[in-house]
Image (cartoon, rainbow, N blue to C red):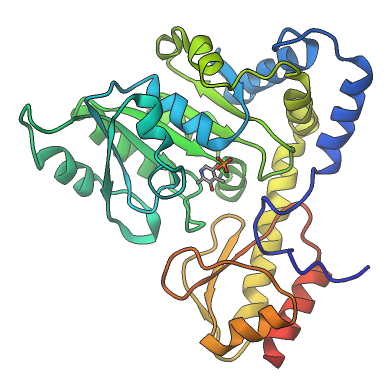
Length: 343
Ligand SMILES: *Cc1c(COP(=O)(O)O)cnc(C)c1O
């Protein structure tokens, strides 16, 4: 097999994993019922309830931007504010969709090492202004695993949500790579979400291996009131919903999701180890999920590009972000590191 030069570009650059693909193919022959009224959507919702050990409300939308924006719109009104890390996807990569779908809520970006929010930053953001002339803080959003491939421990999540609650904030979790975080920490999905104080979550499996479709999971069911109308109005109700949810069934059956996540994480650890042996390579953040952040001497990036390799700078500090996924092969890792040595 030839080298995949896109292997580390993004966990979006890969295809659909075999487990999801098989279920989608099966649903193509079996699925009837539209707009979510079908056996696959029912199964996917039930499996998510089982996964979180709670009778949650679940809605499927097309992508993560919609999941985040609509989840936040269920918490915030137009005059509210959302506290998030300055590197949060909702702040940097959603083209103002959270502001748009909330009708004007302002995101208050906070700093913090390793793309992680801290209680002192929440305190600061909430206390900076308390008057009528400034939007009222109403939500806190954290990302698990973070945009820098780090994770919040269960204790860290709990400390943040307790702090948020003391200020009257509701808690949203962006879980675009939640499976990778859970796999690396060895905790249960329940422990690190609602048991630790999360109210609503955007649960993503696209990067893990489905083709399209993210879930909005309400741990506090009261927040889901009329959420079906929000989804429909936003153009996020799929008529052939089963093609979104069959892939979820495939990954949630037989614990495939955690096996796939563990495999991606393990490949990231191998890549990190291999890189640590290459002279001139600086490893930037701990690898706690499926991302490796490194810094190469500047001319190396151009040389790697001319060898055909695709990867991105994400932290804005001359970094190279290398993502692993279900599709990452050891051959790709060895080929990448070999080319890097030559460069
Ligand atoms: C990829 C990603 C999303 C979802 O992005 P879409 O392109 O809208 O699907 C959300 N949050 C984080 C942290 C992500 O990395």
